[in-house]
Image 1 (cartoon, chains in turn purple, green):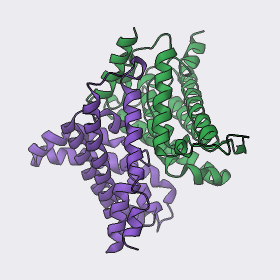
Image 2 (tube, chains in turn purple, green):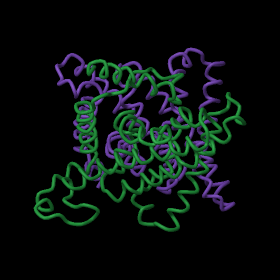
Image 3 (spheres, helix red, strand yellow):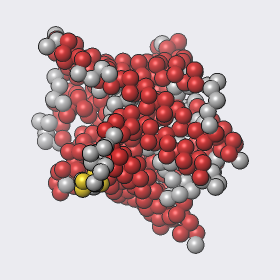
Length: 196
Length: 229
């Protein structure tokens, strides 16, 4: 149990996907302007990460490894994720239209989101069991959520400020991201010591 | 002349990293040392060259409706090949690039060039465009890596530099330094670039995510361009 809590907390705080692993930077910079779109996007990411792990982990363990096809990992995983995203979209549209309305626009964006492919590959590389992999995906998704929501707050305060001309737009956003990620460095080392 | 233009536009005018701001994830993650940056740049260039050429050759065969999945499968195939080659011949590079090597599949530059250029142009032009973009990507990565490695760890390609080795700013090699250096470089690009092409003209149209994009990031770049004019 402690093991799972450590995996969860370190995925959220220490190895935060956006701020320390640099995965999913495009949505982080692109969709974080407004709080509600940031929330929608991150909820969709959490959702897809969990489903993608639930499907790719068994595929890798029971299909690719016994048949010595590990080298097909990249190609199989990206196809599975792309198909899953489509499927989820269709199912949501048909059965849960309200959820589709709020998450729908973000779903197609997720296919080419490196955070989702990244989490499925990392789960295999780290040698996690199925439960550990699911917890790690949840943690990674929550970490993405936390970074997105925090950063949309940072950006809304930046909006009215007087920024030098060449820094307006993306450069200022990147520098704000740098300071936000600096604050996350404070967490490193804390989690392991909590349970030591 | 036209072909030369196809090559050079990727290096400065439409630099994928500093002007189009595509492929930010590998840029930030692998620019901690010059060797990593070169390896990443070369791997991405090879994949880009192969995928651009094949997609251009097949542009009349692939049905328009399923083109994105087709592109992804082709790109994933080439990435797997590069991955196996790197694992076999350059195991040290494989170690240091780690997860970012398979993630070339989702690098926006590659899908973006397929969508923007390769499916409209011939094989030769596409190959030249891919080379230009690849070199532009590699140069931008190396520029960032040089700044981060020289000042962050006081070395260049692993060689120790006098004075700097004792006074290095380690934060530059860590995550916050990546964002900071990238932000400063784009600001410098905004300041010194004489003519900044509007992203709207080519960025969003070719972006694979255009259909569902909130255009938040594109708007910014356009605003910026308008400010500079």
